[in-house]
Image (cartoon, rainbow, N blue to C red):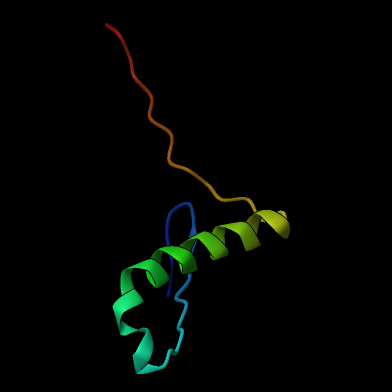
Length: 56
């Protein structure tokens, strides 16, 4: 999809039969989970933005 500041944002396209429509939200969450699991299994680093707090 795009190269962001600290990540490569991918689009996952999945095609399901209309009978799966009632499970739409579950499938969205499952696809996200499976993508994270695949990244972990393949040792892909998933960058997280860092927050720095400065006390004055």
